[in-house]
Image (cartoon, rainbow, N blue to C red; front, side, top):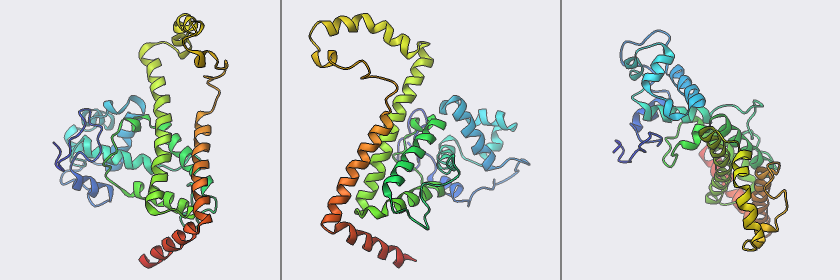
Length: 283
């Protein structure tokens, strides 16, 4: 049982399962300094950077305080002066990768100048997240149900909400748009990651795997028991088909229909005006 009353996953992949107060101190820059005897050249930033590098190369299970001490050329106890343990380190790693710049060096939206086209913003948000999951596949192994929110996570949410504000939806609906898009991206990324992992674990390529099944599938199709499957075109399962672009396009079209509905009855305009007023009142 964790200190906050939650139960951490047995493989250590649950965020918010350690000392939440300590994680927040480290994330927000109030607890960077060790309590005693700092090793020259060792910093919290170096520790987190090394942890992300190990996770990228070998997976989250390879990340341990002992392994990091080897990577950094220091004693394991020296690391504990900076971060209490792997649970808190995981919170820092997550916020670190969420704060990475886009490959182009730009954000999907400028908070000071929200774009008029929210559709382009959703497209950019989805592609950015997919790219992040490709670079850091271990993110898919993390339970983020109770994420400890740091500066990068909050900035990402701020930018996303700013980008979507022109949709004119209610606040819970805007959050739902983000959840829906992220869930779609995560699902597709997980399918791809699982496929790659299957190749590594079995030593069989996708082509070899399906070739083994081909004789049985051909007999099944000729049996007449599966008429819909048998009628599919040869390219039905083509690897060339862009499922990401297709699915994202359908999501955006669905959101567009809702926005048009709200615009027709005036709801969108009132919601946008109320949001603007609330934002101005907080300044």
